[in-house]
Image (cartoon, rainbow, N blue to C red; front, side, top):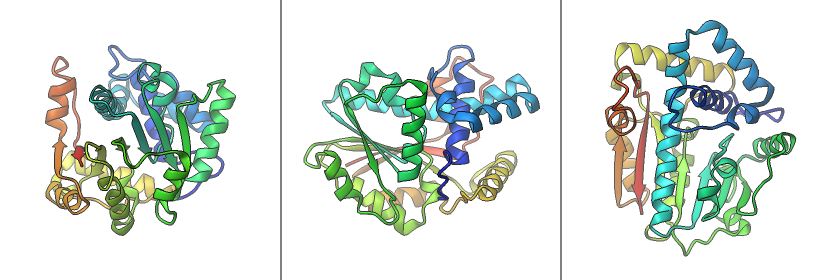
Length: 283
């Protein structure tokens, strides 16, 4: 992934703006009131662009995809806490705001935000500018997962490898070559029994409708233009194989139909493209 010292990457900004748009709609799945502030000037500019170019229904559909995955992750974290897990590792934390807006869950966890050093430094400055205090329960772990010893960095930050953890890796897999991705997954797959991972991956165009495939092509071209090309895409069966090789005993994939039933059964007009899939994997 390209490193941008002056601010977060385009995809991180895009996700934050999507969550912000959704939070302003009716019955938000996740009310992320910090997202737009975290995205800074680039986020405000992107929101203005989307507002001028897209009708309200299209903007809400755009925000929904980001809100659904955030809600899925937060539900998984809450379930893990209820089962006695006290560590939460956020891989590729980006502009994730969980630790700063969910005190009900944060106080029962030690949270490890893992991200590239420059991106993490930018986020910490932005939090300070917003007047958002960094809780004592949050540890920042500056890591380039492609080159650094992530296990050692986590140990230095206080992560307990003898205790189970909940881990999230959202919008990360597509930016890593398979060897680097396997290294990350093998580390998570080696965590203490009872640990679990919530993760997203992007499917190739052959797995999508013609309309969704066109959306994927546009998304990939936009990402590539901004120095964040999609590198790894997986068919569902291929992703299962990857997770099994990495040490996970069970993998539960969640596609768009399941997500609609879980969170949007009372909103028949809602649609999800299925470009990005969610999965929960267990150690």
